[in-house]
Amino acid sequence: MIYLMKIAGGNETVIETIDGKINYAERAKELFSLIAGAEQVGFADLKEKRFRMMGGEFCGNATRAAAVLFADFKSSTIKFKTSGFDGIVDTDVKKISESLWEVRSTFPNYKYTIAKDTWREQPISIVGLGGITHIVIKQKSTKDAVLVSRQIITRFAPDAAACGVIWLDEDRIRPIVYVKEVDTLFDETACGSGSMAVALTTEIKRVVQPTGKIIEVGIDGRDISLSSEISLVRIDRQKVYEKLLGKTLSYDDVASKKVVENGEGLVKLTLPFMPIESQAGAYPFARATVLKKLKEAQKLLDKKRLGAKLEIIYAYRCPLRQRQLFEMSMEKYSEQAPSIENRKCLVHKKEIAAPDVAGHPTGGAIDLQIVDRHGKPLDFGSKIWEFMDDMMTFSPFISSKAIKNRLLLREIMLEVGFAPFDGEWWHFSYGDREWAKFYDRKNAIYDLMAKESSHPENQPSLQIQNKPPTGACLP
Image 1 (spheres, rainbow, N blue to C red):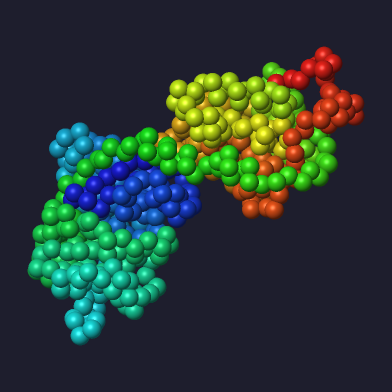
Image 2: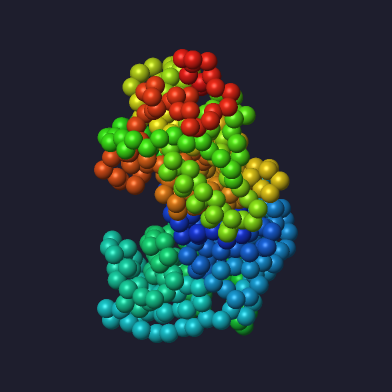
């Protein structure tokens, strides 16, 4: 799950709960693209009581925001680990209302350094806080402060995992912070670690943030504390879903690719994959290379999760049935999208591919999931063919375990050459137009299997069980 927190009235921070390790930088970039206004992203492992910033840096504000999650949004005293700081964070969380907390975190025996230098004849203090470096300049920021800040960071802290330039005007700061791992430079609306740097180099302990709110810094020997209000911000889920939908391949994207059929035939999907004859109306067939690559994917899965298997739920679909299903969906969305062209694009993204570009009728597309050693599907946040907004692969509103399982399936399928359709976490393809677009190939190599001679029931060598009546086209 994801949460959006404000610290001292600003510094909007996305925190995602996770279970185990992930690619933090890539996930942060995805969340940045979905949550408007976010300045930083962090990840909280609730079970291990461990918090990590997107670039492995230290962040006093995000750490305290994470403390609210560790405290289960209640008043509590908790201890946990955070990135960029070697010790244990000791935090008091006081609940003010349903969406507001006062949070005070103490960082005991903080190991920091302070160096002096000049920039354009202006004295500066370079404060090393372990997981982040701050350069404090006692002057009012200028219009080109962001550009100048980048220059200052490049000169004085080019190798730092994260670095901020803190423009200090009396007791008010303007923090401009760079994080190397995700290559972000934000003109932040509040900064906890920047406030620490100010307190360590001046007499100021109540630091005014760009929002006008206060972050209080306490210094007791080597123990440093930060205190301010933290609020939970409602995320507009619909806007997030709209952005996710906008990232999926459209009808025009797919239709832009031509097809040069390579003549490869359909073969029966066999073990180690679960047989799919039990799926009503589904042919257990795919192109020969698809089966070959599924076997490669299974070998990869064997290395990553002992005993787990790929379960193929659906593969080849008759073109006639594809058209029937598409027309049903077009009727379903007739009021939502009166324009036929707009409706066609909407249905293609949200429910089922347009018949002329669909992957299943080519024999190149499959719907699949991972099952454990007992044949039980892993948690993917939704079931296959459960058409809901959270079926989109990168939905941030599902459990951390489900996200991890989706990314595992996506990783192994991409590694062997399949293309994903991120509108449905279970759908992958090889050789069709979607695959050609995803990998920027000149053309697709599988066309619709519409000719009678290419139909499975007309290929005796495939030994199809329960052969349909002559002339029938199974759905």
